Length: 110
Length: 119
Figure 1 (cartoon, rainbow over the protein chains, first blue to last red):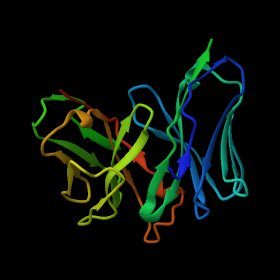
Figure 2: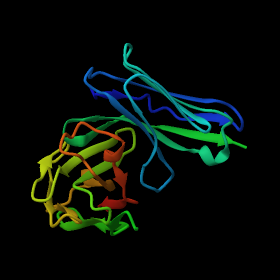
Figure 3: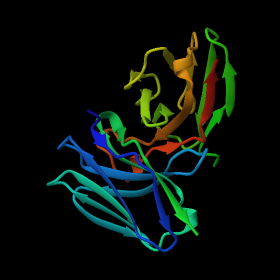
């Protein structure tokens, strides 16, 4: 079992909708959680970073961590066609390595 | 700042051929990583180098070797390519602190990737 699980199914939403993405993790020692965004044929880039439990907002993006249920979420409000990308959740473990989820491809339809 | 650069961008190999993927970073980062990304499998760590002079195996090291040439450069070598190594390869770097416990400053930055097709 991978330490970070993400249902890799694609998601299509109309422009302006809220996008909700979720991951679960198994290692209770995980404390640092990230969301990476990857555009087609590009490398992943860091989108959001959170430490421990709680919410973090950055413009239209909100990252949420619930350590009691080992759940990581990303919400995108007022989604735009430019948000169309693959979103990967990740957590840091020993020696600054990242455990990645499989990624969700999001398509925002104008 | 170019960030993390990778060469080549695309390569076609025949089974049994060898090649080296090059990676360089100009951010003075201590740690460097090689990943492969396959459909439905996500990003999987092949090898990493926590600091200059050290390398360690990741999740899927078989069939690969690495060299941390200096602080800037980290290469990945396929000695005898196999069709199962057809993938997109990403190099990444991070400024890991001595604790390695993570922190925003220890975020990994990725290169643009190398697409490898092994026939």
